[in-house]
Structure formats: C-alpha cells, structure tokens
Length: 522
Image (cartoon, rainbow, N blue to C red):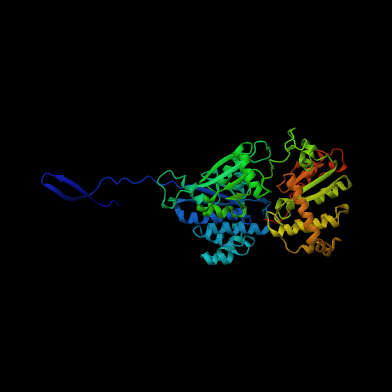
C-alpha cells in the first residue's frame, strides 16, 4: 500500500497545505547486491579454524547482507567420507553442515564454540549446540543418518569442482581471495563488492599507517622477492608503507651493519617495522609470534637465510675476500651445489608432527624394505634454535618427538630398524603414548629415555643446522644421492623419484603403493 504524502502548493494568496494521494511511489535507493563469500576448510585444520572464527562476527554483523557458504575438503571412498585428519574430522565436518541446515542463524556460533578445542569437534558439538540454542536431537539424527553423509558428499563434490585442495580456500563473488585472515580483512573484502549502497556494517575506519623497511640483496637467487614479501605482509598490515633497501647500496650496507652488530644472526631478507606498529593492535597481535626486538625496530621472521657478508657459492667470485672461490671456500661445503654425489643414498627432511611429513615416514618403511641394501637412508628434522631453546612449527611436542625419533635412529640403525618406531609413531603422531611404539619390536623405551635429554637434543640441534644450511623448510623434502631434491608422500612416488638418479636397481622395477598412508596431525 502507498501511503498519502503531504504536498505543498504555492498559491497567490499565500502558502496553503493540502492532502493528496501520490500516484507514483517515491524514489528508492539503489538495491544492495549481496556479496557471496565461500569458505572451503577442514574442521580440524588450524588454518580453517582460524578463518571460520574470523568470519563469524562479520557474518553476524552483516546479517542478510552477506551470502556466506561453508564447505569442507575431503573425498568419498565408495560410500565412506574421508578427510586428512581422520574419522573425527569427518564427524566434525558433518555435524557442522547439519547445523548450518538446521539452524542457519546459529550454526557459526556453535562452530566457534567447538573451535575452542578443535581436536574434539566430533564430540563437543552437543554441549555447544545447547549453549547456542540448537536442537541437539535433530543434530544427532542428521549426523548419524543419511542426511549428514549426503551433505558432506555434496560439500566434497563442490570443493573438487572448485579445485579447493588447501584449507582454507576462499572465494569472494567467485574470485579467489588472497587477502588477510582477520575479521577486518574479510569485512573489507566483502564490503568492496557491494554494487549499491553499503550497509552500516561496512562503516570500517581506514587502517593506520605502519612504516616498514625491507633490506634485500639482488645477488641472492634464493631470497624471496621484495614484491612477494610486500604482498604477503599487506594481508596482515593493510596500511603498511614499505621502504625497500638493497644491500649493495651504501645505505643498505650501513643499516645492515648497524643491525648485524646488535644481532650477529641477522640474515636477508630483513623485514623491519618501526614504532608505528603500535597503532595497529590487530596486526601486532597477528605477527606477535614472528616479532623480535632489534634496535629501534621489530624484526619480522620471514625465513631469512642469506648472509650477504659470506661467500656466494656459485658466482665465481671471492665474495668474502679470503682467497677461496665458491666450493673451495669452507663456508660452502654444506650447501646443496657443493655436496658430493653419493649413489644410492636418500635423505629425508621432515617435521615429525606435520601430516605430510608423517605420511612420508610411514611410506619410507615400504621403500626401505623394498630396496634393502641398495638404499642408505638418512632421516633429518626441520626446526630452529632460539637461544638455547629448540623450536619447531607444531610446538614443543613436535620437538620432543623429533628427539625421540633421532634417538631411535641413533641406537637402532641396522637394517633401518628405527623405522619400526618411526613409522608406528607417524601413524598417530600427536598421540602422547609414544611408548606403545616400543617393546614388541625390539626397540627399548628405556634406551630412548636415556638418550633424550643430552644426546638426543644435541642430535636434533645438528639436524636443524643441516636443514638450515641447505635452506630446506618444507616437510617432507627428499635428497637423492646427497644433492637432488624432490617431494613425495607415497611409496611409489618416492621410489620413482629416487630411481631417476639410481637406475638399474632391482627394486626400481617393483610396483609400490600409491596410496597415501593415513596419519593424524594438524
């Protein structure tokens, strides 16, 4: 119904007020087109958990102005759904899809409640459903019935169609999203897609300016490019103003020298943030684990490994002025290009609680059993050292397991006996009961415990140094014959890549498993 409106009419006697009925509706503002935001995640993946937690308050504030879709990544093996982190993750995926169908206005609140302990998404849904007012009985019926499997199969199918393999994979209005993962980043991304008037939820203040300095060296072939670092950092610090300095310039040498005098471990590329970072509390919090004080700056860890004062090992120049060039320089002996060829050797670099590294360790038992004496296997671990503390990506538990596995390698090397322990642990790497993988296989828990504190930690420190010298940070990474890098997580791929450099070995004609070994992890 169109309501009457007041119309003012000017007449010669003065101004009179009349009531009239409008025959044409008043002009309206341009309609708001809802942006479509799609997430493809795994319910136990920490990065998937991060983005779902970040979008929840945005979706609540946007309400009907945002078309949000949550899908899950995995595959169907016959009628059975499968996901990277195992059966419990599958149950978590299903119950979250069921909640989205049953209570579309409440399901994200339930999921963020579950995400306080994502390892328990298969059981904590019931308490979280009650907390936010979702009918737990309906959820259970969906989870345990055919509807839940149908929803997950459809979700997996959509992820496959969209080639969403990594958690998270994100699309905004059908376009791949590569921006930051904070709530404000998602809000700005969707607000930029409105074609009409934006809703009040898009009244977002501009980001504060943060000053940054990037010191790099054009001689470094392996260094991450300045543009790459800038693009990545801008996903966290939207208001960043970056000054780029090359080490070859006088300013570059001077600044690097001053900072190196305060921290001899400083390497390039070096990314520095000044005190203006304090104005962007969200960015500071997001970067907190990567920051360390360095003079008047905060240095951001970017995986820097290049020492501009050292010999460059492949340019035919005596860079450090000691009279020795490239591989003749002692500083180059451990680099990839200067390592001697060693036939029939295979080095594996992993993180023990990385799911891909764990899968490779399980597969290596099949590979080693097939090649027998035609393969010399060396397993190394990837991590870092901060002062006297050993660190690794997945936390202190991973460091401890790295040490235990090195102890097994040290004390049970004959016929690769250590793989009995290592492959057993890698099938469930986050299980705290490591002793269950000892005993029956002839590997003594007491031997590993005795080795752990002193010998084992020193072995791990040495391993970290080897990986660092070779600039290896991806788990798993293989080296065939001491110098040829490749990747793989199933036995057949590992065998095929190894045999490219070791043709003629009997085991190279065998067909090994191409099935990815099951493993836990995060």
